[in-house]
Image (cartoon, rainbow over all chains, first blue to last red; front, side, top):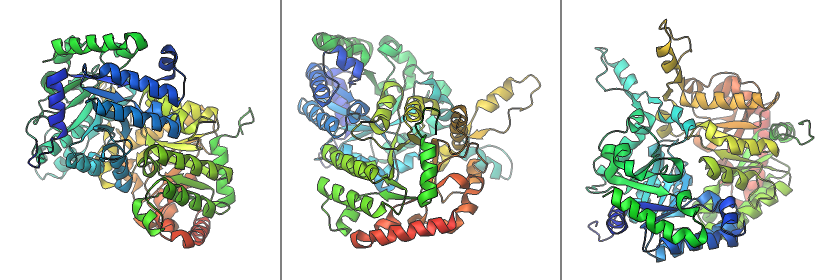
Length: 301
Length: 301
């Protein structure tokens, strides 16, 4: 709890961890899944799909993560469905992470923050995923808004897809530049940092500066299929960093390997599962979520 | 024109350059602008604002660029307004670049492509801005869809905001790695590339591989307030690369300096103006756009 009595997102996430464990259920109404569920590829299908996943998740998992792209694909009607699905999830006590991967600067990124995090906004969620290609500093407005209202943000750091390696492992040359300017020619600024690590460092610093001591309210996205050392991410952040981790299940990482994969980052890991539960279909989804949540709880304390 | 008779986006853009010049008019209904225009901060205000800018642009400029964040801020109703504004702009013969800065992988990024570029989609535009934090390769699906339907894509390369420098100027270590593996120890792979340059190289290669010879259908976003050499972007791409360039006017770059700023990239520059015309208000907007378009034409051939 903050002094003002509003729980931070980190507090709320920690509470969800304690009650339900680390599972986040994806709400990914891809056309093939709509078809497999016997639903139409339109706003009514999106709505029905989303509400069924919410119903099956309530009381079993603490978190749901709608993939915004599949709703946006149907324009304003798709968004009307998303508004209903998010509202139903929040009413059921689920934390909603809108997987929107938004990013921009100035008043535009501020508008994205207001879209997903401002209380009373039609698309109000509990947290949103953001992209920092324009720098973590470009995300100041939504991060500030999040902290003000007990909301959360997850910034992409290292993603599972192979095409992302070059950029995410690129070397930020701040240290090299300062070393070059150093009169004695030594690199006392430490080794050059990779982009993913530089982003994570900025976010950990933001949580610390906000006075968070337990679980931060701003987290990162790191794929579970990666070797964290290759991104300089094998370290222990303080305060504990929420790590939204896709890549379990369908994409190959085993939940039982979570501690090995994430090492010192393990205390903040959120296991994001989508297809591995959604493939169970409308009749099997409730049991699939229940089993997955149990599996995640038994593997991750 | 492609062999099949569908003009490429590059062809259509080139045609717009020839008829109206390089001006792109921003449709940025920020709350303060809505208020200055005497409009309400709701979907009706967004719609009215957008339609007035479209009306003032038609016949004067070739391109409009709605900033999606300001519409998304009002959820599904905001998107319904955006659908109307985009449709009105396209009906008036304007090319619409949806400034959405979307990015993701797999079926999610494919869904974003379908949202903004698929013919018949509620939000169908002519081009969309995308972000490549997950690699240019992660954007294959929307780029393929764009080429298939004569649509365009603009990928963020180097942006004007100072917070973006570290990531956009970071060094991709592909070359360094291959040099290290080189038995004679020389770095014959050339100098390490910066992230922004690596992204631009990939896009230029994509346009060349698609057989484009004049103006490519996939372009980039580069801020007009930057020194291009600092991002290794002072080179001549072939085919000509569309460069969506914010930063003129309100942000400080002079249109008369465009050739100095963009050097060998000048032939593809699109001058993105927003506040400098929108600040003219509902009574002054038509004259402001007319004057800006004229100024851009007289300065950029």
